Image 1 (cartoon, rainbow over the protein chains, first blue to last red):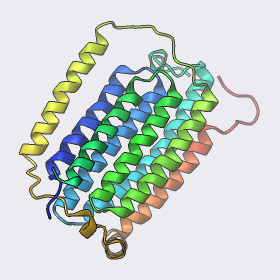
Image 2 (image 1 turned 180 degrees about the vertical axis):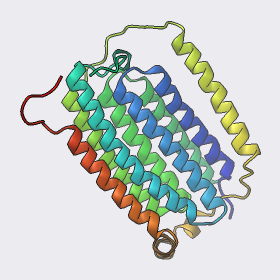
Image 3 (image 1 turned 45 degrees about the vertical axis):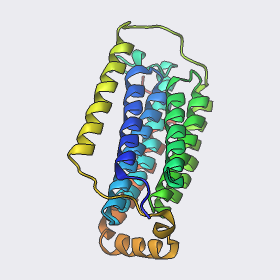
Length: 102
Length: 175
């Protein structure tokens, strides 16, 4: 009883990753850019789980578990940074974050 | 066409549509809600792939914790759309063209070079829940114990960092 080929999952993951890259490239809202990064992490997780199921090993699922934990840490620090930038610039437009001086 | 393939195609369509909705909606709250839907569909893919633990972590951590944090910050900062001001008129079409090239490259390389052979197990076989969870726990706490502990330190550091960044400084604030 064979079902969906692995290649389909890989192609879907590539498409989702590309949508995330496009979001980082064309949006200017820092929050949307951050969500696009989450989408890219998610797409790579999907590819890892698909490969891990294809070779019938648990290692890929363990890696994905660690990636999820790291993503949670990243979101906490990143959102704190965005809030801090908003406090000093009153905007979350990345085009305005062009100076290094706070 | 088998039932599983049809389920996969419908879910893939939903995942791509919600990702595009996240990308193009002007309001940040709608983007966040589209992203929640996208994470949920990906969690269903994990179930289809025979990874129930990852699917549940995906829902609790991503769709639960991370997106709630995003919504808090959106409400804190205001959800109004940014004013339209194109700085570089050629930037958007250029970026979309580059994205298409990236998608073609990634698909070609992953499919031809990585050679993922074989098919995914039937979900009913793969999601043999207790066995799957027990085996995964054994692997996690035998082979990957050190990375597991290091992850806890990483989470602690992130927590301290987030608190330190948003702490009100006593006395005169330098600026």
